[in-house]
Length: 364
Image (cartoon, rainbow, N blue to C red):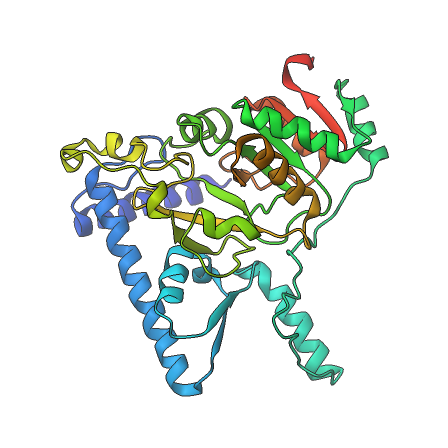
């Protein structure tokens, strides 16, 4: 790098940090330290302003069009808290959010535009049908490629030709508080792991959130995780009346599943508030009892649905923790090799790639 440019970049960074501190009265938060109350206050203020803007824009769209349904895309459409609030306002009968909201989603828009404008094909939507079918549009890998990867790294594995038995085995590991990397079929298109490139855990375990953050994701221990729930069981756990297949909505944990807060809760230090067990699913319940949930449908992802069903058979809970298969600062894994490397560099207990099971304690 040119040293003049390097010096310029450092100087610009210092100026921007000084402007930040002058504006807000405290330095920018670095990734590692635990947040302070003023960080939380600022984040809440920004979130509330974002929600106000989204609601006003949606209200204007309703006023101008009179439409019953709303489709959303773009980076801000990934703000599932704002999306959940918009849904609860009942401005529209339903909303649909593009699962690859943001720059990546432009590829689909461009294809549809050419399809309609250049080739003259009609614009149509199937009634009450999600044409994205789970958004599993990425690459997939065959058995030979997985075995070749294992040979390259001299990895030891077990083979399960009966997928039901594999799901029963993995469900048992999850119920035993193990952490599993789950790699199946085509990769998800978009920023959310939806059960094909996921790291999984038990939502009932009180230490699961901190363990996943510190020993798997290598990030701040308070970061929340999402639940994947059997679509047909969603209302047994959450205040939700519609599907959320792309993890784009928030809902609240049912009141009967919440644990009461102690009288002196609001005098707790911030960290103690964040880690307080507030439901029977502490690993996925946010501080306000909300969750960012994914409903899993047998029609679009039978393998992942089957795994959660086996977990329910063992534990009585049709819910598991789902976080993206990556560590902080890296993209979600795509290939079997990337999955194995990530598995070995973290404290995951097991890795499943297709029908192959890798156990950490047996690896070189």
